[in-house]
Image 1: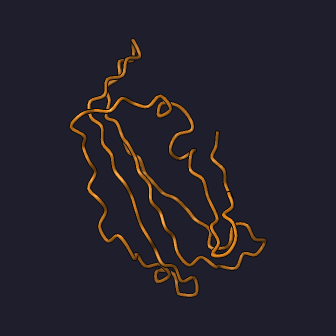
Image 2: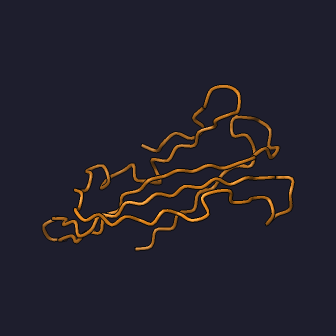
Amino acid sequence: MNDNFYPSITWAVPVSRSNTAQLTSIMRDQSFTTWLVASNTGTGEVIVLQTIKWRMKLHIAVDPSKALGERAMLLEPIEQETPLILSKNEPIAPNALRKPNANDAQVLMWRPSVGQPEVVIPPKI
C-alpha cells in the first residue's frame, strides 16, 4: 500500500474576493488509526492483524513576500511522535470501510484573528 498525503492550501484569504497573499502560518494536528488486515475475498471476512495509531502535528510560519524556497519555516515540532503499535488490536470502525474516507472527511476552516470561524470547504459526503 502506498498512501501519499499531499494537502494544499491557498495563499489568499479563502473567504475574500482578493487574491492577495496573506497566509502567515499553518497549524495542523491530525490523529490517525490504521489497521493492517487480512481479507478473504471469497467470504468478505476481514481479520485485524495489527492496529497502529499515529499523529501528525506541525506549525509552519509563512512569509509570502519572500522568494520561493524561503517563504516557509517549520516552527514545531521538529520531530514527530513515533507511531504506536497497539498490543491489543482495536476493531475496525464500520465507517472506516466506507466514505467519507480520511481525504473526503477533511474540512477547510478559516479562523481569522478577529471574528468567527467559517467553513470554506465542507466534507464530501
